[in-house]
Image (cartoon, rainbow, N blue to C red):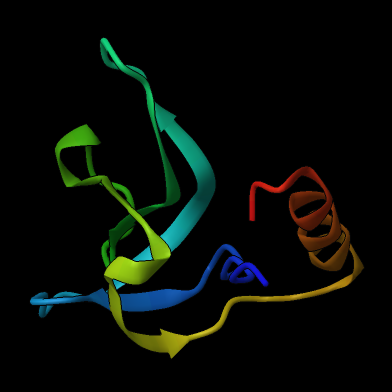
Length: 89
């Protein structure tokens, strides 16, 4: 069974990290010579998005602590269903 993605607005601390990050994107592709997909895109909390230099791509297994789980409603549940059905969750 695959891991459910955290909803946007969730706040996490990465392994070996000290700064809280707020998730604002999921299943993001970093377009390099060999494109790579990441589970999450986040920025520093409480500052929010400042610039591309302070945007972080990471996977679920990189999370050390989940500080807060973001808002969840019917739209989020449907998103999770689609992710599970397509095998991208």
